Length: 244
Image (cartoon, rainbow, N blue to C red; front, side, top):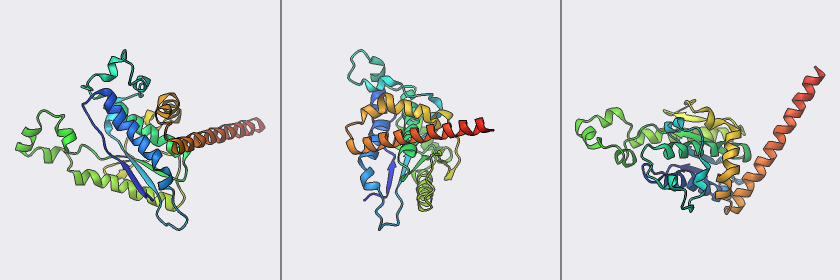
């Protein structure tokens, strides 16, 4: 059994397609492959939690382009370019938050939290920052950036909140975004827009991971049920308005 999954691994500054495949597609596949292990047994008091590690860079992205699906298309040169301006990194982080949205709507038994650890002074950041050595010599890196333990504190806070949520059977479809060890961090409207998340899933993210048979099917069935319930609620609201 698995009680906590933190999707934290990622890359930055490589090719655009590798960035999206590693930062978005890989954690989606891992999450789907572990769904059966995450399901809480009746005898267990531990509530399963998934934390998707985000970044404030998602604010620079409005959507995840569909052309990342066509990784073997020789004419699709753009996605094989180096992600010099980190646009693909931003898109991958937005996409991961939209996947959180999909899971919250389709798998109600699972607590899914988004968390931004902040700017953490790790090799991922240092290797992309040309002045890294000078900052360390001057001691500025400790003043300007968080250390790994400080970044991890936000992730652990999200895990704890997710467990408490599941313990009270209060898992909901609402986004919970942790920043600086607290919920309520500023997230873009696109990251929390259910229709945008469904578009991403239906157009290429879902087809890209449909080999994960059991997990993929559970998400699709859950989305279908959520859509049906949503339509029923709209019909009931319409009837109430007519009666008024």
